[in-house]
Image (cartoon, rainbow, N blue to C red; front, side, top):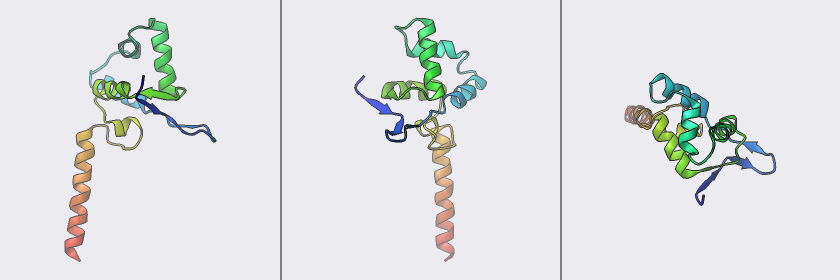
Length: 117
């Protein structure tokens, strides 16, 4: 695992950045993209026992994991159909397209305001 994203934002305060994994999973489940967390965990940690895979998933969901493999972020975003920005809590729009649309709408508002001056 060479490409790791560290979720601990400050070693002095031990403040953890918690992924929005539960919210993303619940959304994907509602859309019929996934069924069970245990199944998703087995897809991520293929070489682990089902119990170990689920514990790893639970630790990631609860914010107890300190780092995450970048390939896992890509896998989760693809499987759960959310953007990385949403998964890391940087956007409230779950899909990249929704995020792009909100940026476009805001840009239109700014242009309209500038033209009115």
